[in-house]
Length: 558
Figure (tube, one colour):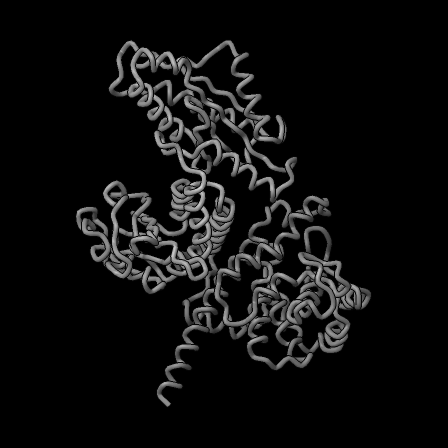
């Protein structure tokens, strides 16, 4: 009997956690789209009651419909606001972007281990009964019943609400449209039932829908609702940052080496979780131990390279048990934590399938420096990041890296562009290349020796990397040649980065080099698709243009 009570209590605690997470995400969606503010609440009320009227009694399915109704527009966090709130008709290109919200929302939510089938309803709520919908073109009863219900009530509430591109319709006119689409867009049974019962299941007020069981449970769990504009702005910003980090992780997966991926992710993650030190541990499968392969923040130089057995210390315990810990003492994880002023840590496992990739551990200089929201965010992100780091480490193994500078090589750059072009049409892939060449490198090697020439390359690589943006990538493509890859960037931005490269190198004082040594570098830039789409063609143009350029950027060693 006691076991049954304990099990029920555990289920209740899990449900409360899911409800709190759902509520937070729903508020982020509502805050993003002020034009349709309250829309998701009304859709939830309609959908759950319509499901019961149709005859659905499965509690798991009813909970799934209830949650999906709140989260069905999650993917709109990825849609630019100028499209989302456009006062006129969307262009075909804009509508194509708008259609992505169904699949994007489903992908984001798939990282949450819901105890009921929420994700399929969110993904398919724009499928049509005749198979003409999106994203997968499902038809008839292949479309989940929850999605069929959601599509009808979603349409009705949208039609009877004011939008930037049209005023609201009357209930009668909206019902006529639903009936016209019966059997083509919408399930006839769902339409017929809704037309019959819509008045009895309508929310009491368009602006003030009744509090749902999810809302009541979440508020009891998480405290007062966010009502101030400042709170909403913060919540929206956090949601945007999470989506940016999620998209960044997907874009990096399999395209760049581990250190570059970790560095970019750490910088974005800090906007969501204020940490003092971020440590990326990878598991050595031959030795069954963790190694701190990268770190960002306070004392990072003291941490990189440290090792611990799986099961030892805090990060090792997280690796062994596949569980997250929050606000444990940093001294239990790092021997020099007290010297670095680190007090508390948050650690979450990086697991892909059954494979342990590593552990992501954050440290704070505050006692109890992390909140439950921070824990949930990190758990959500590590599920996505595990695949990113798995593929990044695989890329390190297959492609190799430049042994002198530690930068990715030309093969990495070719792999990156090739991967991106498999997902985007070449004419739609926007990126720029900034080309940097050290002049007279062979002569420098002969006059001053290989060690000095290589020291010049290492220092120039460091200055170039400092001059680039956090999302840019630098590759060593030839002995004395570097290429910067700037994604989603045009020639104007590439020009600014190239100028910054020249400026920082020009101002640099090269250490340990003969005073007589003068270093010259040259920069060029091109952008795709304006200057071409194939990487090899762009590189050939950059090198050809360089030989035709008379003026060089002189960099004198002081």
